[in-house]
Image (cartoon, rainbow, N blue to C red; front, side, top):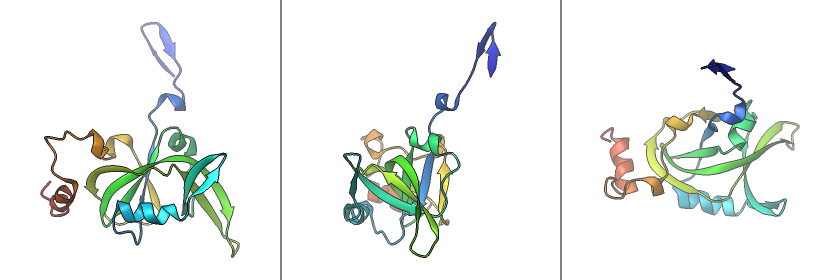
Length: 157
């Protein structure tokens, strides 16, 4: 609860910006390859085409992610694209283990490349740390994505 100037404001979780996830796309060479792999996994849920991704643990803040958050994909050491997260659901595996299925919008949104070291599983990604969408970049001020990615990999951008 916040107060000031004689007014009381009650802040709720929905008043805050959504939080994102970041995850490695293991074995993926570029965003086109990710789209190709996901095409084979696509299914229809409630009349809408969706794509699944899997992880062991469900986020503890799922509502903050599904209220406008995305999963940012790290491909070969660079954040290269994102997808909107629609839902999470727990599933039982064949050997008795439990998995979290992340339900994603199939649309891949290219981002400005951003270097990211390897990690296991997924991590939360605060909105201010997320790379901008490539389409939002200033066309006169940015280099082509493949050149920018190389420069960032070398620590020069």
